[in-house]
Image (tube, rainbow, N blue to C red; front, side, top):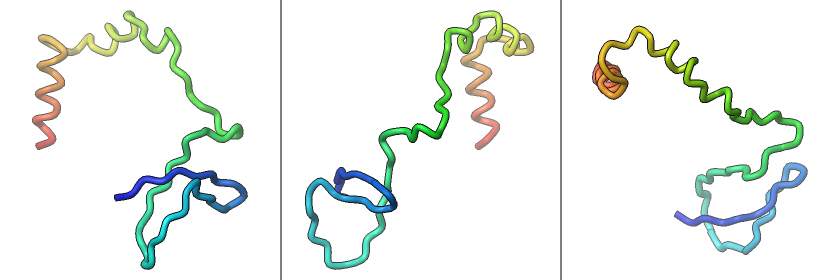
Length: 76
């Protein structure tokens, strides 16, 4: 596997360094910067509310770790 960097602009990708590959290869493209038109969800302190967590866990008997392990075992 080879990792390259480059720039995407108006439907074209320009690589920072040339590469010599003489056959078709599959690629994976990851966009590092978020487009200004896409609204990024940001976490706030309210997303980590202790009261909200207690409400979500009110039906859990025992501790959270055991509940998570049991839930994951049910998927196997």
